[in-house]
Image (cartoon, rainbow, N blue to C red; front, side, top):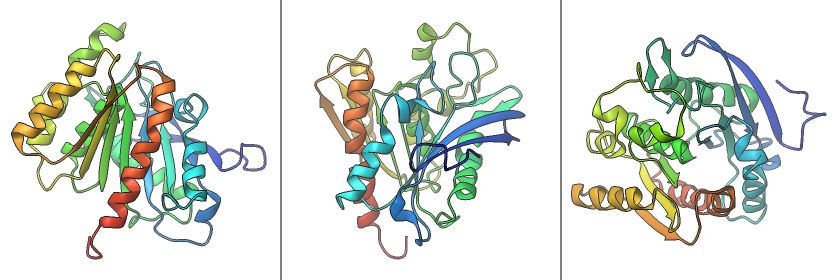
Length: 264
């Protein structure tokens, strides 16, 4: 872990040996000052898009600054942000299982464990949330369907909704990637979920190349009777949009946490 006296306030940079990937991998973790002395503090996994890495949400999107501002204002409860790399396969791993590497398990199991190691206020009882942008939105929404009992809520911004949409963005092919419908289509993962789904939210800019795909996902979820929130806003596929609307996701997570029953 990075030396906290040298890193920006609240940020921790972590390198881990991932059993799921068979290699080292990186995470940026943000711990708000209000977490001190608390227990079971919620953890939000933030997934980046193609070409990105663990630092993108913090140093292109200011995610830690947004979270701290909302926590300071009492608009959301204290929560920890765990911002992992996708495993750094090619232009993007898709956060799915590949031949020989399990990028899904890296996110679902190993990243939360690393966050607990960084922040003593987090535990296995900490509520877990997941969100992402573009390829990370695909990862977040799909993993919510694949592991519905792991997450309290999931959200996507400008989400890729089918793995094939990544083909035009990557130099590599998806040969060796898991190819079942639940691994390649968000809607299949959510429709085939083994258990009650977490709360779902996603949004997209009206000038985003994935707006039609997001509108179709919204329609498909409505047809399937799957509860969710969907919003369209002005904007395109850019950090200006994601930095602005991360605030919507964090507020959504805060509301979901507040509305949970005590027995949840």
